Image (cartoon, rainbow over all chains, first blue to last red; front, top):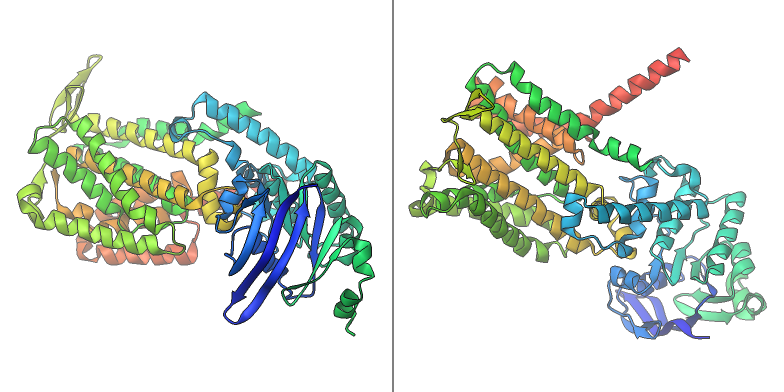
Length: 252
Length: 335
């Protein structure tokens, strides 16, 4: 197994607050890897560090063996990393399908002149992009919303739409930040199936999630954070029986 | 499905072409042609500006500056140095593109509304240069401009032409030429919007961070659209100079930049046909209010405010929604 993401000694401070401190872990290719921990444990900060939205105060992040600290999110996307957000980031001024087509951006290479004059090569590219996006929308269960404006869609559908957009960029790894937040039981069950289907395609999934049942059910490995530090790491079984984790979660 | 899609895409352009062709039926003197030509030139300018303001959500308060550079570059080079109008206009566009790239590229790497401040300053500098360098530009008195010509064929408002045995004046020729340019401007703008580049631009407005995580280099696209909109302004500035035959520094003034922005906001941000309507209204308004000329700027300010408060989406999209709602209600009543 090769490590797809390798984090060593990662720290981030905001003023005097250590949001993430001396954190090391690695995610193997093809895994479903979950990050859990109480509110304010630094999970989202960790995601923002890995995806280039924050710059670490200290530490290294390697993607596929390459140092990626300091790269912009769009440069990370070129290297096969994509994510969704806890506060959903959907372009409400576009249709659902266009949002997913936006995800194909890196695969579309038409020049400005081709675009301006709408030459046949652009039309061909656009048609392929559209077909691919339609397929992805069906894959995540948004098939009925193809021509709907994003602003007219329900919360649960938008959550799935965001995943479709991330998948559209042909990622090696997707980071999902609380994909089940705000979903009801049925929707969560559907999400679980979806995440399994994504992993089955060989895409590595890193998950931040509060829903313990979901996390324990699908993760290959888990990382437990508390106050920005690593509390434990291991298989769901190991985590469940770890005394430190039990203490942190149940108080003790 | 694609065929349907294509037909839908060009629907608006066809309607606009029909309007441009049929409008002269209502004209009965040269002044009408003159006004309509001006409207078409300004409409084409704001169709470009709308790519920046309406679609990418970036504000430029100096677009009249680009318009002015295009106009004066063409005027000076064709008048004083004897260049041919069409190539001159293209060189002017390249100069403006470089200028816009130089101003926009560093600024657009920053988040926030720095572009509006930078363009505000840039617009002032351009206006001051045009005003002060009288030896080149004629200063506040303005300068006259040679007529336009395409491949040796001169286009002047004062000439008489005949085509297929039909006699018509230069004003009519200019009207159809400007109308044609507007159609081309709209066609290109619509092509850009409905493309990967267009989606990238709209995503900057919708959610910049979402765009970045799927690989869109947003600062590059913001700079690109800024340059494109500046080139639109420059080309139309050149055309305007040749059309009017006489230009003054007012073209490049801050007031003029505000007029352009007002056209976009009033007509409907992110609506290509909306901003054309905006240009029509704002160009016709001074004709109606000719007696209150000194209040013109105040009127524009008031229009901008009222639009923001009562129709934040702009005139055209608001009307579109109203019509759609009425249709829906009617069909509900029938059912």
